Length: 477
Image (cartoon, rainbow, N blue to C red; front, side, top):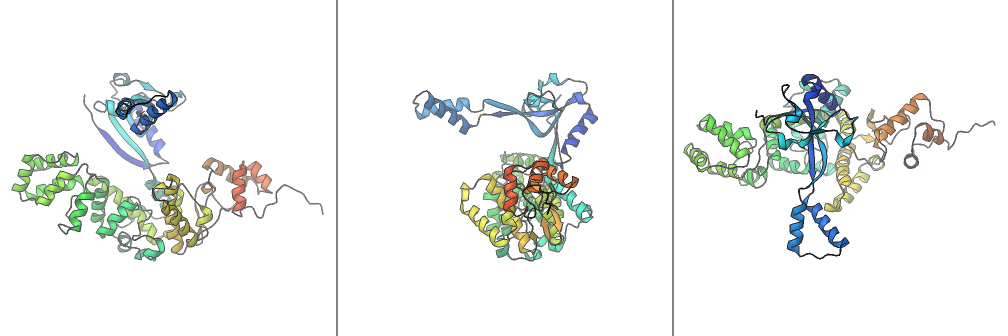
């Protein structure tokens, strides 16, 4: 029995556990397992091991010996884990032990799932794998639907104002200088990264099909950089002509007159990074395929499927619709679902304060920490929101939600879990205590809300506790 098959599907991150558990109902609990992963020692880590060993035992090694020891350590099993969305399905007439031992993750026998001891790459020739992945975009779309009452499936894919944000900022009512960005795609999935924004600036797409092309180009390897980008810059061809997705190759070659089966064979060879054989090149030239097209095929290492690209773009365009036409709903959903790091104090003080912090992080260049890089994206969206005429309030002891940004007129009220160091469960404790009765003092808030001293100091600094006395006191006079 040979499988080498897998099914990929995306669900809202909030729904993902339910989707995983449903596979037990579909196939039976004894036939589904979480795909195991094996973490190995990386080369850089191995180098650290060798260096530390030499220091502790006062040994001196030549560089060649260091390299030999490092290569011996690299790839050695370090940890086991489980794939975030991979589910292994065993045929009902066979047993999991025919393929792999199983274990509890982290040796916890209370875990809901058992995990294959071998990683999927060791057994993928024989078993089906379901990739049931969690994704933020469906969660964002659902929140936008709940807030607006608009069914996302009814949103047009050719709205002129929405299409404008992929080539400029006009439809957002701001200038490039105001938001420090040449497009309006900040925070739009697949089109908000610096790399893709640069592609948008160079190509200025105006149609859905061109966006699909860009999605394919941005996900491929050696498809855009040093390939399609140069062809467009030199005027050899236009965006619509370059190879964007793997399907484009087969469709174009069939159109040129190649046999469909051979066109498919060429597509498979190119998208796997195997290039073109002499026979393939000869057949392509015989059917008047341009030399630039043949050269482009030979450079490609990996290509994205058009179905994936179309699905990503469809989601992006639907979210972009809300950003253009119902902006405050969009910002509330984005900050609630996608953002993790906040500087509420800075974000609530307006564009000058936000720009100052952005420039400070930018000035660090590669020395900026991962947390600061994540914060930059949030600050860019906050700057855009403020420049469009909206504001962000400070944490409100009596109106903030535990984990959602709330719309209040032309502003957003941030949730408690936007406070640095305050998790969602702790935020829910505060909201639950508030629902029981009004806080009488800072002492009461700290005790009933189970708020740490650090969080209390943060709330005081933000001015959230100005109306509360320090302690519960009863005045008799």
